[in-house]
Length: 316
Image 1 (cartoon, rainbow, N blue to C red):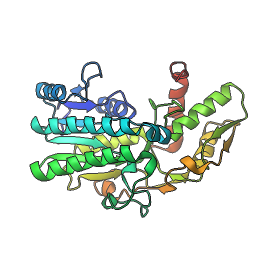
Image 2: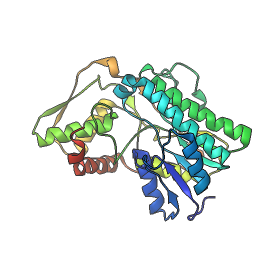
Image 3: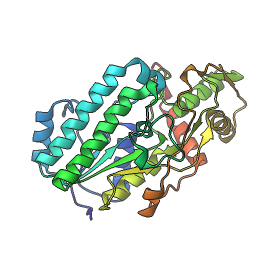
Image 4: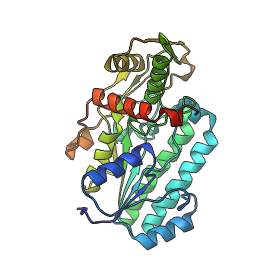
C-alpha cells in the first residue's frame, strides 16, 4: 500500500498523461513526488537514470515518458518511434530493477493489439496477429515494454504493471495538426474555423472507423488506483469499453461546443487505420476501477485548454 509520504517518480511529467498524473497525485495530497525535466535527466542515458534512481530511491515509478503521435507521425518517423521508445523503456525498467524498486506502472497503448482482433479486445489477444502497419514500429516498442515488465515479474518477483489505455485526450494535449491524435486535431480545426468565421472544417479519412476514447484524468485516476494494487495480472486494459465512429465523435463535439460548423471528410481511406477498436476492461473492473468523467465535461475542459494556450501553439 502506497503512503502519502512515499517517494513517487513520474517519468514524463510534462506530457499529456504525466502532467495529469502529477496533478491528480497532488490533489490526493501526496507530498513526495519526484520529477525531472529533460535538461536535468536524459532518459536515453542509462547511467544517468541509474544514478538518479539510486540517489532518490523512489517507492514507485510511473513510466509515462514516450515518443507519441498520430497516424501520420507514426508512419513518417518510424525509426524515431521504435528507437526512442525502446531506449526509454529499457533504461528505466532495468534501472528500477537494479536499484531494487519493486513497483512500476508502465503506460502502453491499445495499438499493441493486432489490427484484425476479435472485439472487444482482451489482454490475452496480444501477439495473436499482425499489427496495424501505420504504427507498427511504435507498437512493437510498446510490446517490448510489456514483455520486459512481465519478464521481470516472473524472474525477479517484481510488481511491474503495464496499463494499456485506449485513445487518450485532454488538457495539455498535442494540438499540432501534423502529428496530433484526432480529437485535439478536431478541436483545433473547430477553434480556428470559429475565429475565422468559416462554415466548415475538413477532416482526412472517411470518418467511418470506430474509436474508443478516454479522458486523461480518468486514465490518471486509473494509474494512481493501480499503484495501490498488488495484481495477479501484469497487463491490464484501461478504457470505457464504448466506441463511436470518428464522424459521430466529431459531430458530438460540435454539438457540445454549440458551434455552427459543418464537418467534411475527404473520403480518402488511406489513413483510416484500424476499422474498429474497443477494449475489454473486465480485468480492470474486477479490481474495482472504472471511468467516471463524462465526455461532455472532458471536451469542454480540453477546448478551454486549447483556447487558453492557443497563442503559444498556433505556430506549430
